Every structure is written in C-alpha cells, then in structure tokens.
Length: 166
Image (cartoon, rainbow, N blue to C red; front, side, top):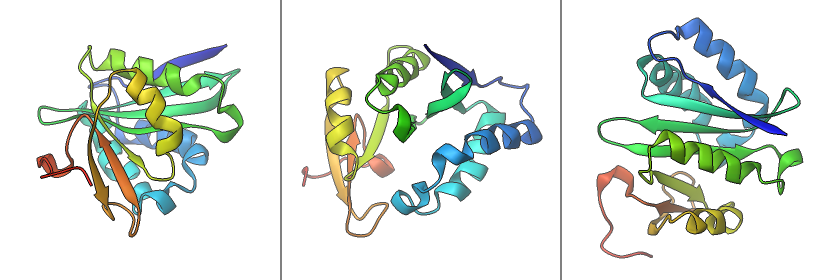
C-alpha cells in the first residue's frame, strides 16, 4: 500500500527542517540535473525557501517506509504548477504516478495547474495528464536543455502564449 504524505507546514518549517526533508529525497532526484540543468540548486534555493514561505509543497509517496515518488508543487498568486512529478524506477508502472497526480490536483482545489514535461518523458506521462483533463498548450525547443523539446500543459512558460504550437 502506498501512502501520500505532505511535507508542508506553513509557518512551522525552518530552513534546517527543510534541509532535512530535501536530504531525504535527494537519492530519488539524482540525475535530474541532466534533464534540468541547475535542478539541484533550484531545489535547495527556490523550493527550500518556497517551503518556508508556504508557496511550495512536497508530496511524498511512500511504500513500506521507502520513498517511491514525489511531487513538488508551487502555488502562488501568479502561478499554480506541478514543478516535479517523479516515481522511482523500481516503482514505475504501479499506479504511483497517478496517485501522486491525484493528490497534487487535490492540493490545487480543482484548478488544473501547469506542468512541463521533457521530451524524454512525454510519451510515458502525456496519456496520464490527458486523462485528467490537461491540455498541451506549447512546445518549447531548447528551453531547459539544448536540443530538447519541453512540452507545456495548461499554461505558458514565462507567462507568454506562443504564436503557434511547434
């Protein structure tokens, strides 16, 4: 059985507590700098401070005490976004991604947030997103990684709609 836990206590999290939470999820996130350059720095700074300020939330999927996946969410006045949705390789194809997405959507109170998906993962993630009502709005070439497409669902990067979908 998989349990989804929130790492979010607005006003109660301090940076040392956040650092401890981030260390706990670090093994799952190894290698994401290749898909998203600067990911580790973003995690420690933007996500860390966002947790303290109450603009970010981390959902952990745990199976028998082991972290099987996570979602990093951003909810601010200007943006609602699933920043990261990741399931450990050993737990893929078990429905954990669907459970994390469902829990993420509950956190946004019925508003479909934006999410971007790399070219490497779009074939595995797009069917799930589309089944939940997400709409492809844009495809950006070389946005995060040179030579790779980034697929944008339910929003626009930089807040600017494209003149067309590539």
